[in-house]
Image (cartoon, rainbow, N blue to C red; front, side, top):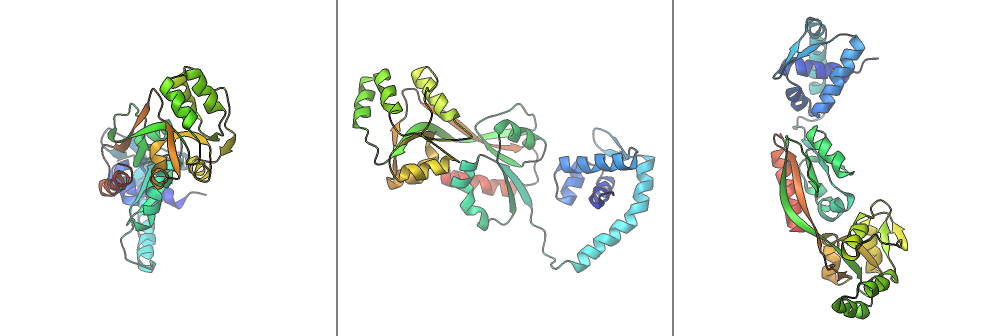
Length: 298
């Protein structure tokens, strides 16, 4: 059975002349418009538009189909408007990609205050960049940049990757070893401690260890927890170590619940960027999100 939304999308493309115009009219993504159109063309077995660089030109089959469905769809839209429980303008919806911890430590508490809808997507940065370019995401928070002509990057923060520990973790011996720069003894001391890590991302630990000791860590964390938020809560309750971005523990550091154990002889810094498309219909909403990040992180 054909999906009614395919016909609505077809009608919007026919009347606006572009995929972008149809996406804006229907409040869906451009890839979604393309998917609806290709599905409808596969269903009817005919090409409905000729695609040019500037406009979607209806084929003869497309004109015939439009004449068949136009009046019926208009009737349905009139019914929808007549029986809709409110005349309030529909809220815009923006989609944002970032890592889970960044969301939890910055944006999560602000969601109830926003005057627009938000869809949060977690995942790998290369996929986020691709989704941004393709119109699936409207904004990403990323330490990585890709080669996409339609995407712009705005740096806003530098995160440091450091060794943190619970406030009760004794570090007098380590402090002396760090002054002496005894790498073998420092490694031995660190490996004797209780370590926390996450199942999904050990890259911070591997990178820190390789940069400061010239090799991969030859031990595994004692406790593997779901995410970095869990690590911080565990460390705040006692002793132990972990390698994490410093901004994630900003509040706990200020409260004295955890402390920075070592920044490394060779410090690791990542620049975080706001990634957006050059052309977006959600500039106002994106600016509000960016303001929240600047308030919370800078």
